[in-house]
Structures are given as C-alpha cells and as structure tokens.
Image (tube, rainbow, N blue to C red; front, side, top):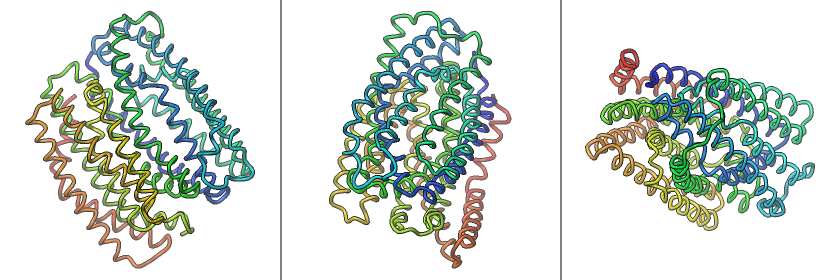
Amino acid sequence: MKLSLVKNLKRNILAAAVNSLLKLLFPFLNRTLFLLLLGPAYLGLNGLFSSILGVLMLAELGFGTAVVCSMYKPVAEENKELLCAFLAFYRQVYRWVGAVIFLAGLILLPFLRHLVHGDIPQDVDLHILYLIHLVNTSSSYFLFAYRGSVLNAYHRNDIETNVRTVVSLTQYLVTFAVLVFTRNYYFYVIVTVCFTVIQNLLILYESKKLFPEIRPKGTLPAELRKKVIDDVKSIFLHKVGGMITYSTDNVVISAFLGLVAVATYGNYYYVYTSVAGLVWTVYYSMAGGFGNRIYTESRERNFQLFMKLNRLVGILIIGCCGMMTALYQPFLREWTRGRPGLVCHILTPLLMVVFFFVNQSRQVLLSFKSAASLWYYDRWKPIVAGAVNLTTNILFVLYLPREYKLDGVIFSTILALVLVQIPWEAHVVFTHFFNAEQARKYRLLQFRFVFLAVLLSFLSWGGTMLVSRHGITGLLLKGLVASLICGGFLLAVFRRDVITILNTVRKKN
C-alpha cells in the first residue's frame, strides 16, 4: 500500500508545528519559574537527572527504531498478520527493557552524590528525587509505549504528536500551579510521573481506535527476529555514541563545574532545542513517508524527494541561524536579568549557532538513512565520534581558562560532528543507496547553504547592532530588525526554491 506522502506530511507537520510552539513557550515559562521561585541549582538537578537517565535508556538498545523501520515493508505490502507479530515482539521486549532500566537505576543510586560537584539544595533528598525520576522513565516501557510504533509505521505521527501536545499543555499548567502555590520540587516531579502515565494510556486508545485490527498477537518468524536483532546491535552502538556525544555534557559540567554551571549551559541549550524544534517539525514528520517510498518508488524518485526536502529544511536552518545570531545573547541577558554566572560571553551563543547549523543540516540525511535501515554500515561511527567528543570535552574543561570551559564543551560536540559523524553518514547513504553523482549534487547544496548561513548571520548581527536601546523594548526592536533582514534575504535568495516546493506539494502525491 502506497501511503499519501503529501497528505500525511501536511498533517504531521501541522501537528508537529503546534507541538513545537508549545515547547517553545511553556518550557521557557517553566525555566523562568524555576529560576525565580526555586533557583538555578534546581535547574541543574533537572539537567543532571535527564543526562543520567538518558544513559540508562540505552537499555532500550534501539528496539523501537528497528521494529518501526521493519514495519515499513509489511505496511507497503498490507501484511497485517506480520504487523501484529512485530507488535507482540515489541511489547515483550519493552517489558524487559523497563525492568532493566529500573534495576540499573537502583544500582547507580549509591554513587549519585559523587556526580554532583559542590552543594545541593538543603530542602531536597537527592536520592528520593532520583528515584521518582527513575520511576517516570521506566514506567513508559510497561505502559503501552510500544503502541506508538503502529502510528509511526503508517506515517500517522500527527496522532501521537497531538496526544503529546494536549498532555504537555495540561501538564505545564498543573506544574505551574504547583510551583507557584507550593514551591515544592517533590510535588513538581510527582505530577510529571502522573502525566507520563496519562500520555501512554491516550496513545494506546488512539492507536486502537485508528488501527483496531493491529494487535499484539502471533509469533515473529525466526528470520525476521534475527534481522531485528542484527539491526538492534548496530543501533545500540549508535545510541551509545549518541549518549557519549550528548548526554555526558551535563555530567561532565556537573562533576567539574557544579550545578549552577549545568543550569547556565541548560539555558543556552534550551534556546537551541527550542529553535531546533521548528526544523524538527519537518524531518520528524517525513520519516515514515521515506520508509514507505523506499519500498514503492525508484531510487531516482527517492533522491528527488530527498533533495527537495533538504532544500526546504535548509531554508529554515539558514533563517534560524540569522535570527539566533542576532538575538541569542540579548534574549538570555533579558531572560536571566543579567544574573552573574547565568550569561556567558559572546563566543558561547556563536558556538551554539554553529552547533545548530551543523547538527540540523544532517537531519534529513539521518531520517533517510534510518528509513532505509542502513545502521550497520556506520555502526562504529558514533563510538568514534563519542570518544572524540568525550576526550576533548574533558581536556577542554580541565585546561581551558574557566570563562571558556563551557565553550570547550560545545566545541567538542561540533568537532565530533564535523570530523567524524557527518562525513561517515554521507558516505554510507551515497554508497549503499544513492550514487557518487548524487553525492556531488548534495555536497554542492550543503556548501551553498553554509555560505548563505554565514552571510545572513553576519547581516542580521550587523543590523541589530545598530539598535542602541536596551531592555525589553530593545530586544523587541532587535527582533523586528532581524526578522526584516532574514525575511527579505530568504525571499530574495530562495524565491524560486519555495515556488518549486509549493508546486511539487500541490501537484504530486
């Protein structure tokens, strides 16, 4: 069965866009309330727990990704019996995963205090809070998280995204009330656990309603179980490398610099993730469509689709880079009210913009590589990249002057991406699916986007430097100037690309 790519992509992007706006506004309000009512040390605890549990979630091994991608072919062939068998296998695995994560988390409990440099807030018990976070993480694996795979396989990410949006909105409103009226961090974390349960139950309900015939039953054939296990082995290495590359940053900062430094880094990273969510709406929405098209279209047609979506995402990335360069530091200065230790020098936001461009520009390539199940061919890439990142991370934190230590953490990740991950990923996709001539066209497109991103960033930064006003009024004026410069630039440079994309969406399925 050939799914409607354009129709599904439109509703997936719409749902993801609404979710991204929610993630842009409410986490900002959440962090602001934390800073005002509880202090930066609590933000540091949140960041530390997230990083530790991110390491523990390696126990998932990548089964979710492997199973969803294995479902693309049965969906294309309308083999519902096989889809049910995949779902039953997935459910069985996830129950074991939840148990392993919980037990591994308990083993880590006695060593928790050694991961925090300096003091912790006196009115909390580090171990109790950690246990609550651990329950929140492990519970999803017991509570029907596997049902989301059916929605993803049928390219109906919008259903799951809408559930997450509604639950997240309600959760933020409740937690805001808890913070304002109780100022109790324990209540805040317990509310989070409750909404995790609610979200999983709603995903179960929506999945059953839309695809009632897809139920966890039957036994997966031995050869398909072996294929999933082989894919999982490769994906696990990707997850380990990804954990080393991303999740250890907060742990290193906490161990060497303390919780306030974690909160400072978290503020800069929050802005990055909020803006990245705008681009995420596109490539997250397309993954299932890629998986279906791989089994229903020629490789040449797949490459045409790949390049069109790269252009679309590239336009968004360049515009975001221009806005971020102009507004990153002024926004953080106003948000934190210039509190000492929470605002770094100008090099920090500039490095975050570079990190944003480098990381986001590879996401369409990664989406296609995942849909084509090409994990095996670069299975050692994330380990090498993670080793480069962690080694340079520690060296920079140890030997750079204190005011540049956070910059060293960011630069370490950029180095790992540019020197290891991106070249390796491109080689795999253009060797095992596309060809050398198509690789040349892709590289030319990426080089063009690098040049335009640098040019627009320079223009928008220069334009906002002419605004002499400070405070909220100055920030709004800078935002207006940056918007006019970026909007005009994108319209002038990419007008033909935008028209081509719109015509493609209007004419083709």
